[in-house]
Amino acid sequence: MKFRAVSAGLIIIASGLARATEEPKIVEKAAPLPLALSKDFQFRKTKLFFLSEKAPVQSQARQTSSALKPGSLSGGSTASSQKTATLQDVPITFERQYRLFGAVTAVDTRQRFGDYFDFFWRAKRPADLTVRLEYRQEKLHEHVQAQEISYRNVRGTHKTEFKVIGDDYLDDGRVIAWRCLLIENGRIVAENRSYMWEQHQIGSL
Image 1: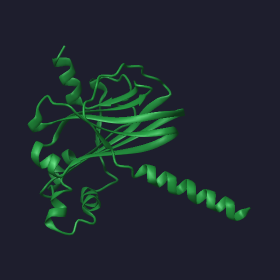
Image 2: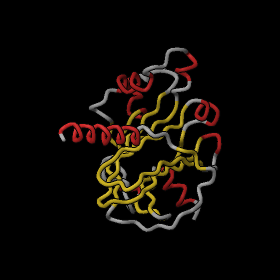
Image 3: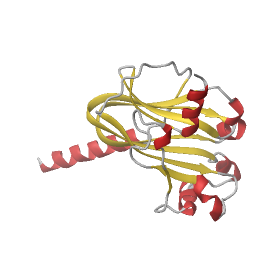
């Protein structure tokens, strides 16, 4: 009985790790989805990091790594409520080393350069959810690209990671605007967006 309990615990932990490290899939065409914001789902925090070819000097650190405070852009919040804070507890040098860990050759290192996104979100009830990142890059102008990861029967607080790095970044430039969505049954139930995405939406009206 004790062996079974331990085995079950290991299976659950292994399953959770596998899901946490799942790679996003590319969405060929991000079709518009209806908005149905729900209090059952919420973005808690967003962590952004840009790994540049050159290590930033201290004065550039604020632009390299930042975190959006919980609730600053969740759900129907407006751009005026956005607050960006420098990550004081994670030094830029450590974050850079973390992202470059395992890169042995110059080619390996080159493929790590670009934009990293960590989204922390919460589901108050069990649901099948898809987390989608939609974004625009410097050299592609108005073209919208998307990546997404799906979760089955998920509940509680979770972290989803996206990245636009390597050739995607080197060929098409930095991400200049983005929004992240929680999708249930083909409807947007929570949304988090950058200031530039908000400005583009206003300008297109």
